[in-house]
Length: 320
Image (cartoon, rainbow, N blue to C red; front, top):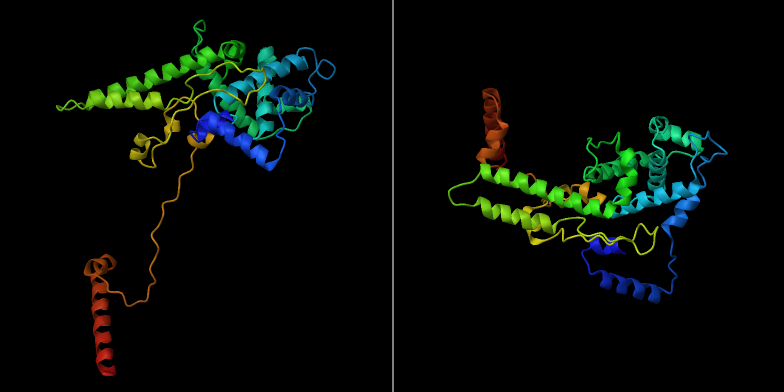
């Protein structure tokens, strides 16, 4: 519900009222599904308990479910879940949860293919992309952990998953502020280089600050009222279709400027330019001299064209 309201830039109370009225008019019962229940049932398909795999690879299903649900909730807060199929997302979350609970060298060497083999489940290809996206989000938040001195990369972020998930709301705000500050610094540098005598750069910087603050994808995230309900996040999204965006034309993509944005915005498909309707061609249309010149390339072509014109004029005079 919150995701729909954010994407269409509508008041959440109004969206909720429309939803309740629709359910009442259609006389349907909307099932309430908990992410925890779905994840718990999905984890049971993975044969990675101590009864199926060696002890150093085994994991408690309850601990695995708890960590995977937290990863799915973080993915929902950062728009990874939006418009995506659930099975690859859950597979990616379980894989990262399994690695992060005991980040030994042996587990970190396991690829998704090998993990699915030992867990006796079929691999879903989109899960690889979801893993990369989740690691990207974890890296952005892991860089904001004060006590981590080493460089946070996709190769070592699994070691910091527990800290990221424990402080994810604070890290989300810190990452957003750092991202906006970096954009502001880049704007100041670019505007300073192109500053003219009319003093236009300060106004450009102020406009950029307002635009960036208005286009933040994650402005405020509060803890969920019920643990496990990862899809009902309270992140607020600004108006991506404001006047400033309209003035920039279709080439502008606000998803490229904010830290987190829906996949449909980040990877927006280019709209085909509307082509004017072609008029019926009869062959009697007049051809301008400039258009004729664009087709004539050599003196031979010019002589041939003059000869054809002369022959046509002779034929017309004979017919008349």
